[in-house]
Image 1 (cartoon, one colour):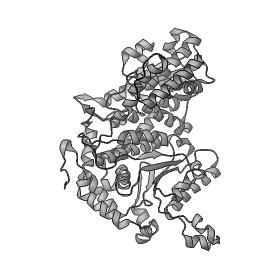
Image 2 (image 1 turned 30 degrees about the horizontal axis):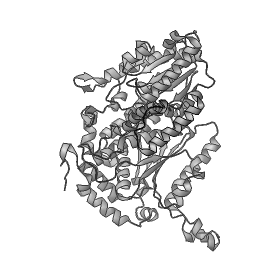
Image 3 (image 1 turned 180 degrees about the vertical axis):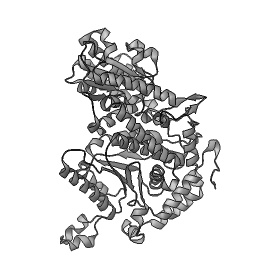
Image 4 (image 1 turned 90 degrees about the vertical axis):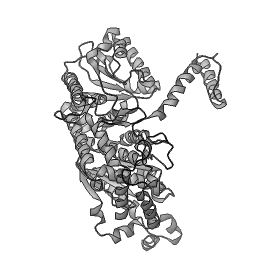
Length: 552
């Protein structure tokens, strides 16, 4: 049995061999059939004991299916699997992305200018702020109308072309920070290689006043560069080839390909191999965000990220919100048979948060081998999904309340209204609090009967309760609080991966399908190419060839 710091091959502790894991198994047996009603009744201070306030986020974990012993054993599990040591190694810039042999330093993206963090003898914080300064100079020029299009007209629309982390974060932020926008600009986003996505994004736009941001570290990403060429043709058709330099900038590190595209060297904004795409919205990938809200608000967002970073870095596990949230996921996955988490923001401006978190969570922790390459013998990664409240209440909440599957929820609300309709906000928040309570405590058959419901309907109108949720309330939805919220999720993802002994920072699982797509693409367009795939794929290609032939 492992003891604290007793790491196996390549520093990986199998969590199932720890004393904490055995204790948690016993906890799961002990709590089998115990209801949240009973947990609250037996611990009068439970609501206070399981509540934290960090960086303007009020977190209530009391409606989760755990008690003080479970929390203590989860904290013990973090110690025994070396979560704190791995966290500290990340902040020092050590190589913790084992399969790519890279440091993981998205935390450097939001360190203050006066900080230093050396990687191989070089201060990466200085590099980060050099790019931030370049972004601010450019953003100010566009926002003030001194950086214009080819015809001399000021830019009115920005179209961000990317995929995955090069698009989800900026799009989510554009919606979330709608009320912070302080420029005469509108941002649109293109990701899908389906040409319809490009058509929708450019519908009604004037090429003379449109700026494209091409976000691709290598400047070779198939989907992104396919859409980039569509955009280039769209500009050139209207304004001529020379206009490309006035209507395109690049977020990339491939200077040669960027120049070949026609983008000037001073219009290329770099980022680094130690930042993965899904952790990059606060890097140059966030250029569209800075264009919308300005460099000062962007700096406030970075300050929110950094504040949560510092909490995660310094707080003991028992008081560390990202760690406790991440450990609760381990508890549900390993001991309660849970395979998905629902994220329900009761804020229309956070409508794209679930999609953003899908990539962050599932690309990070959907792994079948440990950091040492050995297969895991336990479940890792959880499915993340969700929709804004109150929309979901009239669709899938039926399953959440009365279905047979256990789905813990993150219920997210904002105390300050996000509109000029405070009565609507009151109703929205009433729904949020009521859903958290009704999921947790339900309504017994006796209570249903006492309400005068006919006997034959009682089974159908009984709510078992015991459906867990974590309530996260933001004081306000500001640039600072958005940064803190995203950092909270980044670090709870880290905590899960550290316990499970997996590499949360590679993403080899996205590669195979993309590689095969290149092969299939040639088969679709060459009707004489022999089909050498499996029988099912060959049939689908033949059907598409026939349809394509009929179109021509």
